[in-house]
Image 1 (cartoon, rainbow, N blue to C red):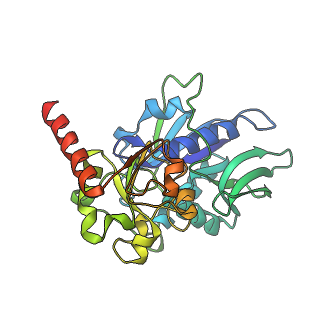
Image 2 (tube, rainbow, N blue to C red):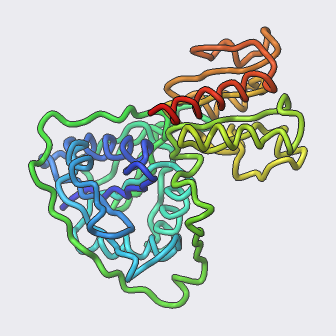
Length: 331
């Protein structure tokens, strides 16, 4: 018996959202009425690139890896089939993932394939004596906490990405066994499949990036995002946008941060020309540090900022880019 946790990776290793999910999984695994059970990570990628030391630090006892030779690229139904097979093989009591775009999609597929209910955006979970789980989860973009009883075995949950701080365990495993796993797949499992060219990949998604550079109406138009793209590249991050930017057609919806977009939990969120409507704040409140650049000293987002620069984006952003380039050149 074990708790499985789907771990997504970016260029620097496990995403922050997945480390939070591992923390959630470790707490869940230690709260069983029959005593603690181990946590096993599930990763898609080369076995020799599994970050064993990081996974062990967050309570993982072992890792199961599906290598590119068996499944290359992102195929949500195939990922779900792999999780279903692993869950049966290890007698999983629960399967957990971060409530990222991929985490929610894969877990929804897993629920459909197994006929089990799935609880999304959980912040707490405890197993009950009767085999059910008592869960607390976010509703209405985190404005409401719902208590519910989750039936079915294994229990399927995604973890609200901004609600559970990532916390290393006190006594991590000294060595992490890695087990290659070959899922049983058919053509239907691979019908929906996404691949990304290496030349166009930043190594991180909006939901998992450690740095997000956000742009709003104050950017001025589609051409105004070029400096933000350059700044994000120098910082090893990605670009996000406010709802008005997608409504104007300046950038695609997949880059939207907010209640109707993506919730982000980066180390740094640099919000440029964004006023800060409540729907946007609901999406970026999980950022560890918020820095704002805005010409309006009364913009609502300033109330949520750790630091603010009241000034023209056309002057501030090029100055930041120049300073970063100078630092890189002197390193």
